[in-house]
Image (cartoon, rainbow, N blue to C red; front, side, top):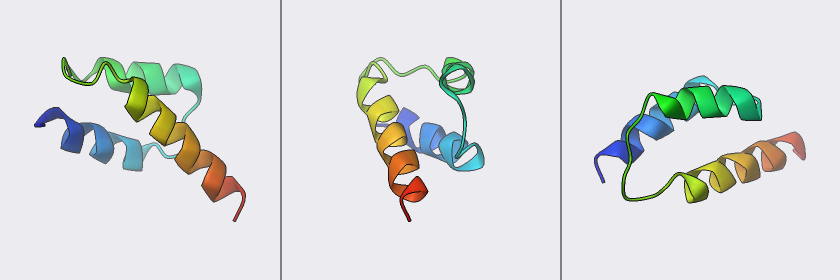
Length: 53
């Protein structure tokens, strides 16, 4: 979709955001196709994997 690249670009700029910061960041993007659940889970997984490096 068109919204995902913008969300990913925002995620890269705020890699270590808290849950509240993530919510604020996603509030700037309108995505009707994903509901943000998968995006939030992927972001959390990425942060956990990077912490384990």
